[in-house]
Image (cartoon, rainbow, N blue to C red; front, side, top):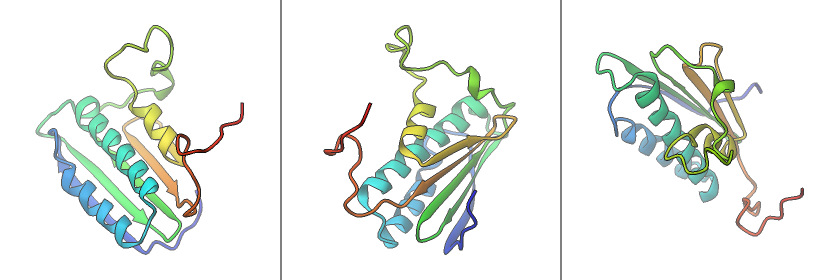
Length: 154
């Protein structure tokens, strides 16, 4: 991890119920806009946050009202780091099935980790598997995302 001069940071503790992270997300998105991050980065961070929070509440804490989700967000002019930790037993990320495998392509869930990895610059899970740390490096204003006219080399 890179040493950063964090210009904004905040810690949140949210209950394990659907939608509980909306205010947290809104505050972080507001701060990204205030710091003039480009819309595609804000979208990417929003999507990854949404997935991480949903996984912590649903799969980690299993909607247990006695358990909380801890969210820590740090921002510098060039980097956002978001840590999401639940009180669950954890999981082994290497055992999560690949959602692009032909037998999983029609599955109604299981794409959250893939989306987080696609939209963030770095995604790591702790050894227990109950905390994810995601980082997003700030894009240049003219830098396209795949699907926005960028060419992907094979």
